[in-house]
Structures are given as structure tokens and as C-alpha cells.
Image (cartoon, rainbow, N blue to C red; front, top):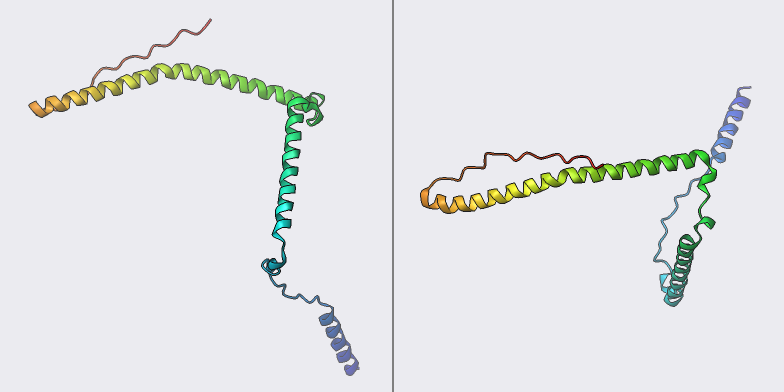
Length: 155
């Protein structure tokens, strides 16, 4: 009985060992192997053909997008939630554009004030350097600030 049990375990171990997949180490592909047999003229021709196809496809797509875009793009007005989302996005974009215009108008006077301030400091520094060289005193920085006036809202 003991012999049969050990024979059964031995046969089971042999079956399990032989049933495993054998993983062979795959060699890395050598792209240089056989490169001397490649016809460069054929490669150049294939490259030219693929480049011509790309140009033709892109020019056809461009023509269709410019002239008849409905054939390529879906009709978004049929999809109601998407249409509403696009309308909301368009309105929000226009509101942001208007807000950006308002901010640009508000920053205009500030930019001119800063430019004038820099010009005054540059002239004062140049004048102070010439006077300071003679008198030995440094020029004092400007003390006053010019208030920025708010523009009345457009009516």
C-alpha cells in the first residue's frame, strides 16, 4: 500500500512538472539583421506613396470641412442636452470675453500711470545723478500719488 501511494505521488509530481509551460527566453529582435538585403529604392517609393496618400486624405478632409462640414460632423442640434451645453458654453465664453474687455479698460489708466511714474523716476535719477555729482546729495523719490479716476459705465 505504501508503495502504491509513493508511486501515485511520484506520477502526480511528474505529470505536474511536465504540464508546466516552458518559457523560452526570447531573443531581442535585431533590426540590423538582413538590412543589407533591403532595397532602398523600394523603401523610398513606399515612403513617397504613403506621403502622397496622407496629403490626399488631408486635403480632402480640409475641403469637406470647409465646404460641406455636415457630412463629417454630427448634427449636435438633435442631441438636446449637448445642444444646451454648447449654448451655455457659448454664452459663458462671450461673458468672459466682455469681462476681459472691461478689465483691459480698467488697466489702461494704471498702465499709463506706471509708465509716467517710471519716466519721472528715470528723469529724476538722471537729474539727481548730475546734481548729486556736483552737490553730493541724492535725489528724493516722488512723494505724491495720482488718483485713478473711474470711468462712468457705458450707457
